[in-house]
Image 1 (cartoon, rainbow, N blue to C red):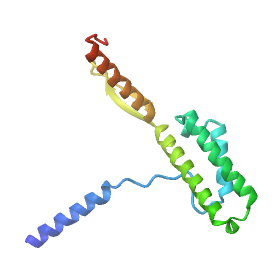
Image 2 (image 1 turned 90 degrees about the vertical axis):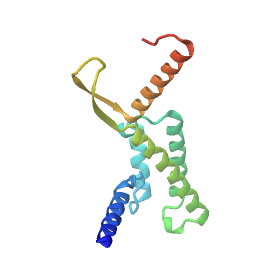
Image 3 (image 1 turned 135 degrees about the vertical axis):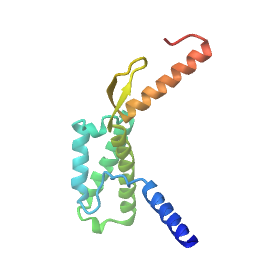
Image 4 (image 1 turned 45 degrees about the vertical axis):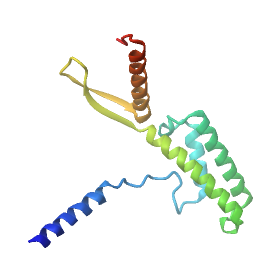
Length: 157
């Protein structure tokens, strides 16, 4: 009986641990696809103000463009990636990671989330849709306003 309880407990724990892990994020650069095509696609998305990257700051957009430019230069100079010197492979990999990190974060921040909320003093729920970044800014603004009101003693209402 004790073994069955122990086995069931262990199975439940392993199941909980397995479901608690976050799903891996899709990186911008996919393995197995030609790198030059992927660079072209990313540049096109950046130039057309793709909604996936709506929350991309000007500074981050500039970093991504610089990394893509360096990658484009390496790919134009060495069309066959198999003949790349190790130093250039490392540089190319590092630039890929810069682009992956910045654009994956921007894509997450640009994701729109809708929540049903009841306004204070009302029983009617309304749908509030905002991007993740907009929600974060609204939260930070509310916290700042509350801190200012507590510090100065003036009501924010």
